Image (cartoon, rainbow, N blue to C red; front, top):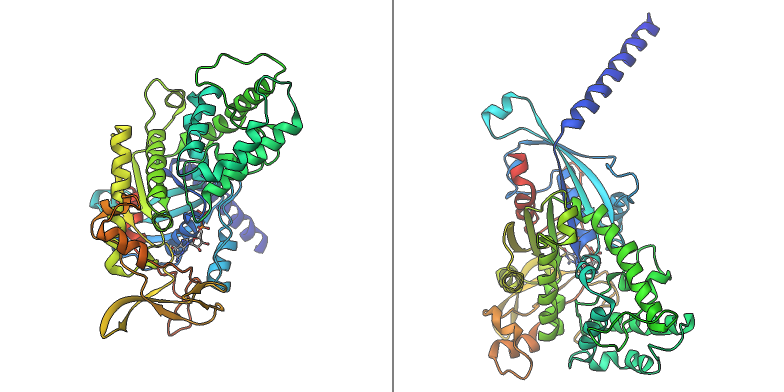
Length: 493
Ligand code: GDP
């Protein structure tokens, strides 16, 4: 009898699996791309998003959760077997248990979150509970900025790269690379040793441009800074040469022919597969931008960021005749640009941060003559590492933030050990977002104020509060719920 029961159970289970697979097949899915340049906050964002959805985080602006209609969210095996899985569990453990920031994005990865919900509409509710697969694709923004290379010849790539390297804001940084370049004869014989020497110098130049003090964004080719699994391959061992924009193809056997061949290999084996396999299949996109990082480095960094955002927008809406348009199976219909790490500022400054990003994106949109997708902009912190406070300074109440600086951070000559909490006045962003774009010789009062008073410290992830029953609450955030509402709210309505 017992055995029969087991058999019946098994049969029921099999049946359930079959229907599950059948209904799963019909379950709608949204592929959401999460991108941004290195350290923009992709890993932290994705981890916080999943953690808040799974653990019923406080999401008052996300209507499905706020209205109590979201019944369950859980992780499921991802649909693409050949893509690395986003290591959610390790990232949560780092953030929540160890209170350290997780390992940042280095390559593309994916995670499927399934959401069960009750529809808000009476009719849809009659049809039964709804289900949505949210496929999250995390990828480096550097790779996205490679797209424009597809339509450029090696000569055009070289001319542009060297024009940038000779510009006033990069000339000094590029000097060591230019020195190596000057010793190379493009029409001389090909040489692996020279190729490596030149490519190394070029990579070192790009890395220096990205450094905190310069914080530049336009640094193609993207894999030179974020190689994924291709580090050291010939397709990544080339560099621009000093040849005219419209130079004819190189004679075979020359150094230039070698560089040209590798550049073309980079396009064929690196850029195209990435766009075909990942980018072209996205439905929606969030672009994370570390505006504070660029603000800290000054107007040159902001100008460079603006160009990069314009390029990003062009990638989302390629001209109809372009190669990319022909392989795009889906069209991205919503794009959110989010300024991350807003918890470094007091609440009063969040709108100002948002206004600066809005201006950056708007200029990019005008430049790219972008239209056809809903674009939204917000300032957010996927994980809020600080709390609000006010401090008294010279008899004046100043809006401040409270947090635990990471070990080794320093402020006004004081060094922190990662254990003590401090209150600090981070400074104010200017009221007029235009003023941050003015170069340092401008005498705008706002600019002067920004130069002298903004201070950013890196804080440890927050200690999670516990309920009376000892359950730890989900990760605190700023406006993560608004981001969710824009990105998937309509798909859970
Ligand atoms: P990725 O390279 O885009 O994956 O960047 P990460 O998500 O790893 O973030 C890089 C660093 O930025 C982290 O190590 C944190 O120090 C910081 N960070 C990212 N998001 C936040 C946030 O919401 N709040 C704070 N305070 N810091 C953040």
